[in-house]
Length: 290
Image (cartoon, rainbow, N blue to C red):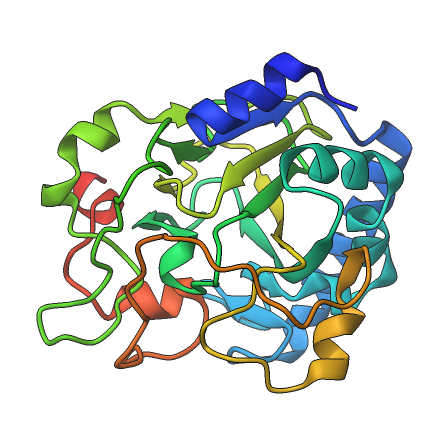
């Protein structure tokens, strides 16, 4: 359980970091699994259902920037999000009914880890209410030098919903940085020792720079929604939808709240991971800064 002060900080800022939720033994197991997955990437030459590859990837020098849906790739990743400490924290922040929306493992290798441009997760998967957050599990010690996630406190409140579309009207998965200069200046880094977890609200503004250090920064991410939050893009498979329940039973009466929404349509010109979607736009921030 986390303190009432941390819960209130999450309500106020839309982001908190809980120190060292995972112990060394679990971290060692995860790193071993991840190392095997990277080795396996030598067998592929383009993006797959499991791998999103860094530019410059080759069979001789595998470079992976994302493991897609890791909870489906290896049972250890499903075990983590269903563990008692995580469920207890989620229950305090969201409520007793919980559903896993998705997962990913973003890998920033030393010296070349790709940036993620400024965005709100809400732009990608709007729901009937915004009791939704993302967990960021630090698999490495993370400081300001190795590309931490940056989040702007308080950006999850009110009617703020930034446009994530490009000049041609297609969804681009990022915000024009010229529109959020003040918010960028106020952003804070989610840093801590390996095993710590950040929790950020689905509407919180965030991004992360290239890893320019000589150390990796691997971040395991889970998106979790209240069970009565239903995706506005629809549910294609009700049985699969319910299989992702982490706590509580099935819900067929969505809770509707007055939250700002802009649909991710027309779809992005470049389909795939957020890296692929954002790469089609010229409205970059981190690439320009670098």
